[in-house]
Length: 366
Figure 1 (cartoon, rainbow, N blue to C red):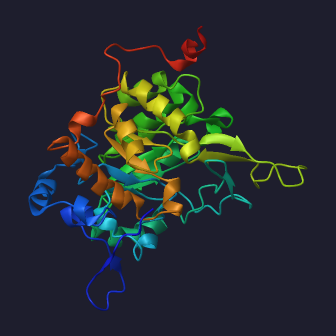
Figure 2 (figure 1 turned 120 degrees about the vertical axis):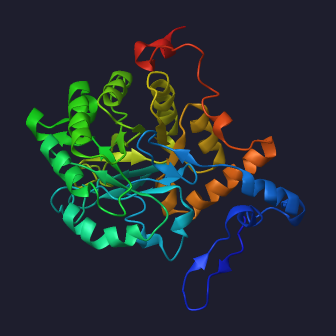
Figure 3 (figure 1 turned 90 degrees about the horizontal axis):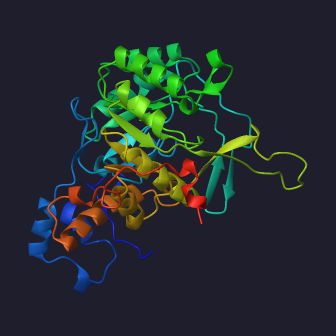
């Protein structure tokens, strides 16, 4: 990709910043002839990329490009590389009630078109997160959404209760792809009743905007999404990682220390698109898409399938500035199409009438 000129911040700050707004579009790496004129820059600055992903409770983002949980730490880790204030929102690392050491190594391995990870929700626990990062987040304009995980409904509720009212915490994203110890290890995310119960319990425990993250590891995700909506979720995130496995080089065992891992990256995009497409037809709450976003075309595809925003995940490891750049590129695309906002790009690929889920076998009919 063509390199982009960077503009340093004030002397002594130590941070390299990328230009914002129309100035940023001018530095996307295109030839001088193709760069915006002053008139076009004014038009760019008037394009509205804002989106409320929790209508009724209010979680207004300046743009629809978020960073995914587990790929951006707590935001501070990338502070010397990226101007985090230009991101739509940050979903921080998965946070649990008590500290977790995580799974035994190896924890990560590359795959064709992606990666497998089995980190095991390593984190210092909710109290430490609040104490260390809350004061930092409070001073930021970018909203921080805390990803919450647990092994029981009580775990989720208690973490949500402690986060409720904490300055700097803009919302909660429930990672329900966790084993429910009360149901013999069955994931909350693959059982409609369990998904409904944990969502409803957390909804009662907090007034914070509530997003719930769907698992792709189900035959038909639509009933689960509908149950989550009925239980009081403000938005749905789709999707979490696909369950996968890698074999050791000598082929005598599974490679990852925890045997199984979560597959992410470009390889999962078709699955994510399918789930967003299906869920958008049965729920009325906003959908935040995630799964293999690496460029503007990916963003536009997810918007067309009904998402109102996207999260960038695995690609950040190779290109930390990608989330910021995608916001600028979306603004430029709106200008190219003569749009004052990106709203008309949402849902353009959806059918006029609700169709059958792929689990019904439609894709195998001759």
